[in-house]
Length: 234
Image (cartoon, rainbow, N blue to C red; front, side, top):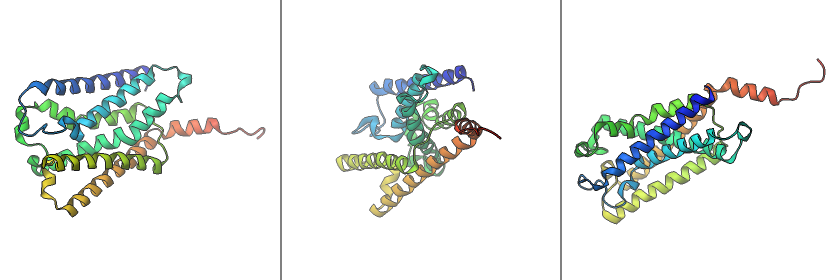
């Protein structure tokens, strides 16, 4: 894909997420469904945090596109690749996968019907559906350099643990789980559920790495060949 199309894609994706976040922010003055933003506001919902994550990534990607070609290994590019590979792709895909899986079983466990009067359907899909095709589009737009797996998983596990602690803290503070589904688990069940979710996120990280390698294998092989020393004679 040409650099111009890549820049357009990044700017469009950033603008889209900025627009969605602004629409959510505009809801602050409206009458909310009971308990939806009780304690911690939207900052306790992984869906909202993911929107900020996606917006940050595409904003960084758009900023990187403005740099000169010779700065392709700049600090901004390294941060962009790290943000996408370790967080934006696996977390974004996880939000979509988990949300629609639970909704298919019983939407009241994760997205009660009362919310429909507050969030129109397009916002629901902006938060829980469109994230997936936008991320897959990014895989096709340009290759990303993935860090060593052990460091990536350590960072992903650390951030995941912080979020889980935040959820528990909210429950201990107000006695209400962020997601109604969690109220049906015993303590052991919660631990198992959290471990299962972290395992899914890890698998999605591996999936992103494999997709990146598969789509851009020829380009990576070409770059590797160029860096190999050529023999003086044949």
